[in-house]
Amino acid sequence: MSSAAAHGASFVAIVVAAGSGTRYGRPKHDLILRDKPLWRWSADTFLAAGVSEVVVVGDVPGGVPGGPRRRDSVRLGLEAVATDHEWVLIHDAARPLVLVSLVHTVMDGTRQPGIHGVIPVTAITDTIKQTNGDHVLATVDRRDFVAVQTPQAFRTDILRSAHLVDPDDDATDDASLVERAGGRVVVVEGDASNLKITFPGDLVIAEAILAERER
Ligand code: CTP
Ligand code: MG
Image (tube, rainbow, N blue to C red; front, side, top):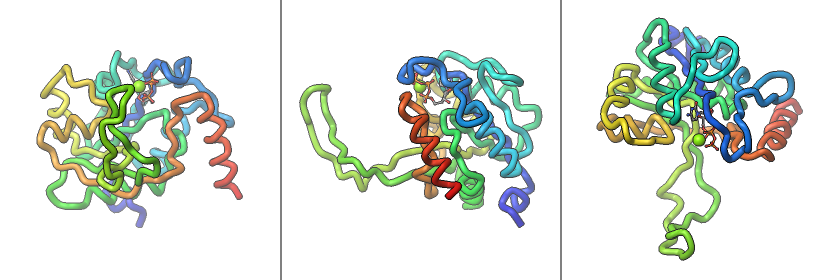
């Protein structure tokens, strides 16, 4: 039985695609990777993973309007969900290479008792230093840190209430809101090939990863 079936398809997915792409130099929602726009890659993957409903936030066909900050777009996505399920998956459209297997790993993580969120993480390979902009203040032990990806899974009721706690908290991911609201978030193994398209060169890397997957 697939993971989705094992969960009774108790997941809704929200794909946020309403950013301005400042670092890319233009909005990324309609960038084409191979034969389809970025957002459609992950929407298709969530459907293949067996979720009950996919809400896309952004200026795309069938999408709902986003907001000024990522967290606003997530909230607007939550408001557009037709039928709440126990868990909601939040995903960045800027990560088109998400695999069904990673979605299932995150879904499987939600079986742990007493938790409110599951996030996929990878080990950091660069050396990490704290600076004040110009000067190095300290070198931290990178083994104490992880890089965080999406999709992230949350109990829907917990995520909804976490969004109400501090409207000024400009969180870059949903887990931050849930953590600050006192929620228990656990990590599962992410996927190094689940690249986030941030800078123009990333699209070339994404093409190369797709080619490698076909070898
Ligand atoms: N996002 C969104 N609404 C916003 C901001 C971000 O839906 N107001 C989405 C983006 O579309 C993207 C994801 O959040 O899929 C991750 O954001 P990021 O990679 O930072 O994209 P942008 O915010 O568009 O890029 P930048 O930060 O460089 O402006
Ligand atoms: Mg951003």
